[in-house]
Image (cartoon, rainbow, N blue to C red; front, top):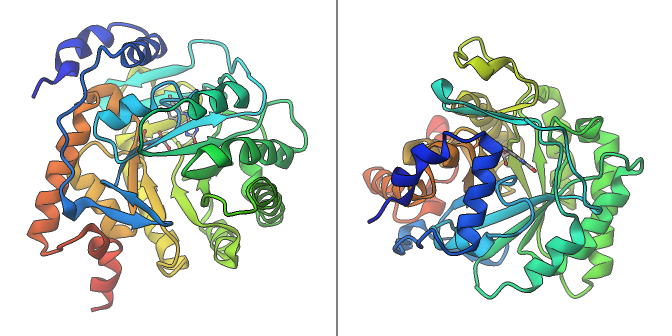
Length: 356
Ligand SMILES: Cc1cc2nc3c(=O)[nH]c(=O)nc-3n(C[C@H](O)[C@H](O)[C@H](O)COP(=O)(O)O)c2cc1C
């Protein structure tokens, strides 16, 4: 199997991180990155929300903000792709540079600030897709919108009919005031209004609505979020977004840049939070685990901690898309080692074993 990225990766990494990303998107768009040979063994399949995922490995939001390459990324072997975050109106985001590699730490810091082409451009691209395959849409708000919920209503109504799932993203650290929407009262109102807009747009049945949360929430806040979720307002949770914390262990020169930290240093805290959210929701709600995954064993730890699906982004920066197939092989080995015939049996296994 040709690992295109092993050849191109070192060159791509000579460029500024965002320039390299733009180039990667262009190469994917023009078909220069060959698809990976298909590897989707039946053990890795999972059915959630009435949809069949060929495998549980997803591309996290932020890589394909404008839905330019969801099908090309599905061809790289991802079981699903999340596009966005998308805001109603196009916006430029923060001044560059705003994305930084931390190579010694296997990490990235970004303060992009929801740069994206807006909901109309994204809806047009999703409507023009030719390939089957699961694509979720991650919704954000414009920086200058005061009534935040109104932006999520627009996003849900426009992108719901074109997506397999929707995500309310209130956890990016780079839009002022956004994360305050995770508080109980604000959240109830936000989720309620978004859900209502979605139902109005799709009275015949809407895609599942998920909430993506920050790893910096206090554990008390998690109980509130779980309560809102279990009220029937949400169909799933994504744990987690990037962190504003800066662990002492960081060694890279860019460690002091402001923004959200992702990649390896986020693994432990995001997995601990996932474990807690699974407990608080008693395993009743599918959770997508994201944060610091760069191998099959890390993906599998999140599954056993309670994730039904996982995603990654930062590891793409260092390993390229061939990592997806590697993760799937490693995960299959781990499932087999532990005697699971299907992925669903492994979801939350740690909690059952701990209880005996
Ligand atoms: C450059 C960059 C841009 C991102 N943009 C978004 C975004 O627009 N919306 C979102 O919900 N998450 C965004 N994320 C967060 C990722 O989806 C993911 O939650 C986080 O990076 C942790 O996963 P990782 O450690 O595998 O990167 C972004 C991450 C990076 C590195």
